[in-house]
Length: 463
Ligand SMILES: *Cc1c(COP(=O)(O)O)cnc(C)c1O
Image (cartoon, rainbow, N blue to C red):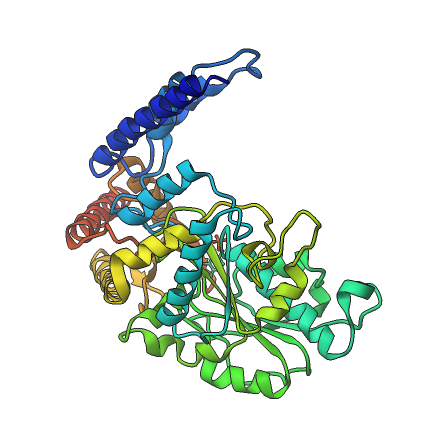
C-alpha cells in the first residue's frame, strides 16, 4: 500500500478518535449514569448482515460515537458504584491510548522493549506498594479471574512436585486428589479457576464464615498436608478480609500453599489507615489483584503475583525455535497469554501519576465516602448489613418490594447507579466506592437522590 495513503488514513482515524473521545469525556459528568431506554434501543442501528464491501474508517468511528457512546454506563464519572469499577486515571488512560497506537505485543523483550521495560518497573512498584516479597513474580493478565487461574495452577503443580509427581509429564489422571480449602464466601471466579484446572467439587472443602464473610477460626478443620488454602482480601459484598495472621501460619505448618484473592481488597495494604485489615497477607504464597478496579487503570488489567516465580514459570513457559532467548522469565512465560497488549504500561502510568501517597489517599477517600453513604442510607431508613471497614456498603430495607422499586427508580433517574445483591439471606443493595473521580459533592448528590426516591416509594405504598 502507498505509505502516504496508509499514513493519512491512520492519522485521520486517530484525529477523529481524539475529537470523539474529547466529546465523550467532556459530557460524562452531566449525562445519565445508566443509559436511557432510547439509547439502548438505538443500538439496533448496528444490526446489519455481514458487510460485504469496504467502509470508510472515519464513518465507522462516527457511527460508534453516535450510537454506542450513549449506550455506555458512565463508569468514568463520579457516581457509578456498581461492581468495583474504578474510573480511569488521566495518565493511565492516555498511556492506554498511546500504547494502543504502538500496538506492541508484550510477549518478549525483542517484541516490545519499552513496554516490557516499563512493566518490569511497574512490577517492582506494585510489590512495594502492597508490601509483598520483592522476589515475587508479577504477571499482567486480563483481570483477577486469570490472575487467580495463574496462581492456582502454579500452586497445583508445585504441590504435586513436592510429592515427586510431575504433572507436565503424567497429567492429572493418575495423580492423587488434591484438596482445596476455600471460604464459603469465595468469589465465583476462584471456583471457576479451580474448575478449569481440574479440581472437582468433591475436592473442595468450603470453610464457614462469620456474618462479615471472614473465615471462622472456630471449628476450623486440620488442613490436610500439601493442600491449597484459598483466602480472600476484600469480600465482594462486605469488603471484609480473612484473618490472615491466624490462618496462614496454620496452613504453612501443614505445607499448604496459601493463595489470596485480593482483586480490590489487597489495596487496603497501600494505606496505613487500612493496612491492619489485611495484616500478614504478605506471608501468603500468591496473590491476585486488579489494576482496573481500585488502581483505576483502564480495562483490562489483572495482576498475578507469586512468591515462587519458578512455579509459575514451569507451568506457563513455552519454547520454540523462533523465540530467541532473552530475559530469564519473559512475560509470555508468566501468564496464559502468549500475545497480549502492554497493559503494564498503564499500571506504570497510574502509579507514576498518584505516587504512593496519592494511592493511599485514594483508598482512604473511598473508605470515607463509603461510611458517609452508609450514614445517609441509615437516615433514609435502610439497615446497613456490613461493618463498613473498606469501600463497600451493603444495605437493605424491611420490604424487598420497596428495595426493588427504589433500585429501579434510581436507575431510571440516571443520577447514579449501584447494584443489587443478596447478603446473609437478605435482598440488599450494594455500593462500591472506587473511583478517583468521586468527590464529596457526588456523595451528597447520591445521598439526596436515595433519600428522595426512598421517601417517595415508601409513602406511595403507605397511602
Ligand atoms: C472482581 C473480583 C474478581 C474477578 O476479577 P476480574 O478482574 O473481574 O476478573 C475476583 N475476586 C474478587 C474478590 C473480585 O472482586
